[in-house]
Length: 285
Image: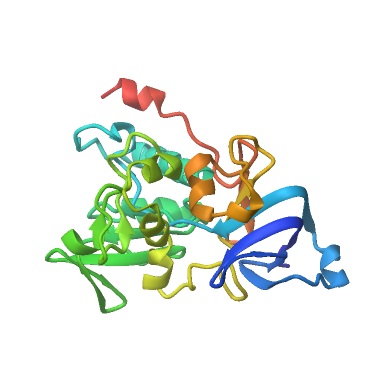
């Protein structure tokens, strides 16, 4: 039985028409309904979140995040050992950090023998991997890299150097944000480095569109990959007349993150992936 979730109260969501006020009803992994008039039967959902003070919900983000490079983020690239135990710990550490910061569809670079994809699939998670050869496994969206060209389902996405960019170099052709060398895992830090925060926000949902998953907006039929910001937090609060997902994301982190309709992160607690300790691994390098 799929989990049904209702989010309502003083709730605003970022849809294709801009910021709107209303409720969200999630059925399983997708948003079934949004709107102003709340049908009474939705209040019988297994999970009901009611916000007495303003909260804004934006579509989940997708970005290229450090996988096996996780301990070296912000440093010069290092090729770490790739034994099975290390791969699993580093991938799970990366995914837990991604979810906690609202990156609901992380993109990782796989090993030649698909070890990253194997970890994702074995733990019943969903992510995207970029690999030189097919790594098709349950839960994995596999983008192939062929002579510097990214290809998905036999469709060319574009040349790496044109469609992949970092927070400082958002261009018109950018479709994937590369955050592997950023010291922080927080989109808040990425926004602070961008000259065009609006373009960065669009780039953070572009992979959903490129992969044909949804529109990148909070609307009926979209995946229930959602980031909830509680505006009662004094760090995030701003006049409702100036309510903007870009400004909110620039100010702080999310209170709740949904991945595929499941609560992955809530109020500082990791619920979908527990971050493993990688201290012993780092000490051995």
